[in-house]
Picture (cartoon, rainbow, N blue to C red):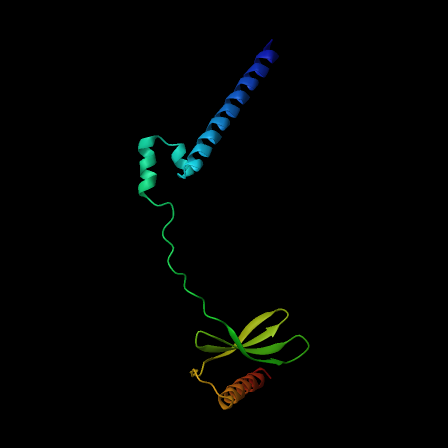
Length: 141
């Protein structure tokens, strides 16, 4: 007799949970069909007005564009090691790159860049980058 009562209680509890889930899903479907917040369908009408007054997400403003990292020069040192001159935020970094990690060897301020670049200026920039790599190689050795 006790087994029958336990089984009957379990069936009634399961029916109650399933009924509650069915009720909540229908309320949510109705609120989504109206274009209202899903939570507004579950709240009383007086509280639903509060959700309408406060926006769900703050207004997204323009996102700042991240600065680009440019590789100025690259020089192989050994099998899997190299020196890389990278520029970011107006600073040039000399990086020692191996298969085990990246180390900052030296930093310098980047030379100002003019809008109209000629071939002579680009060779000067290349010479400067090569000079930085040479000095870094000497300091490592």
